[in-house]
Length: 356
Image (cartoon, rainbow, N blue to C red):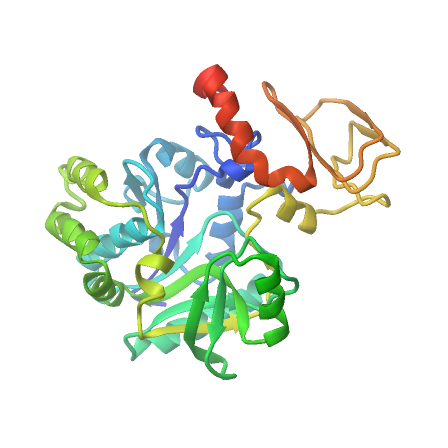
């Protein structure tokens, strides 16, 4: 794995996990799964068998730099690339690509979100190794697809062009409605988009120059300043001018050299309370709840999160989300989770940022 780096994207706020996830403590730094480890720690350990510690880079918002170093003490401060503000994944990846290319013109990148669940980690690593080999002699932009298990409306989909292990991408579709998602499942040509990418740093820079010249130009102008004392000020200028856009919209949907390696390794993006409920261990009444301190009566199909040491008695709820924190209690039907943004906006309007 010489010349190959693992880039962990860890700048998101995780608002869909409010009130557990907060602006100053987003979900990638939380033990959402109840394993004793944060999601970013799980991600780091997942890829550690493939990479030396010095081959990791984390892109995050500047205010989370110390949190990253606290959770990943094996890394040095210079391995944490600090964005002044979040601008979605295209600028995040551009920053990492220009930084790595300056350090090593032959750099290859394995890019992964920091907050996903993978149950079969060895199988994932085998897929990643195939992708790295595929990009070695090709100017290919690789993504990893997941064989879908249900008609999920919260994920993006990738349509393959043939039945080969590595296929050229035919199309991308972002978060379809339920009817379209069901059609995708029946068709058999569509896979979930994992948000994991593999490519050479110079190849994604070329793709950005071709499809997003404004973003490429901004980072090109400060490339020589990355890694110097002037980097922070240069990034402030670039990010103030750079529009927020995902790498899928910015490049992958437009590129004619996008490929996908599909796999099945127990993946979930753990993006919402609902997706956590799907993965969580449940009691005989289908409640996902703490093993201690939570007493339920005539309560079924709920997901319940409590602070450590707190006792809760819950009677008569069906298919609810109950999340209690030190300063916020949220109780809502699981079917109303899409209203979370409305709840957050109203709380913020009335009380400011202290509960967000």
